[in-house]
Image (cartoon, rainbow, N blue to C red; front, side, top):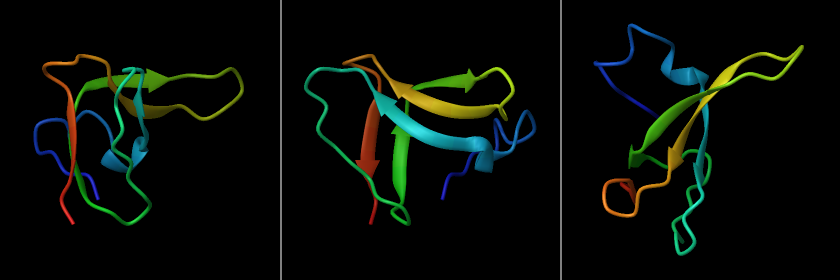
Length: 70
């Protein structure tokens, strides 16, 4: 479950379908149904002839994070 009052007016939270990390030592993982707190870069993914979606990228070692809450 993802929640944010700040960005919910711009797009639907359910449009976020991925959380990706390109950091070399990032080891956290979440499974379907788990609740996580994430801070990262929101990116819109657009493929030709496919539906657009959003993902959160964890790229900054000092600012980005993902914490399992349950």
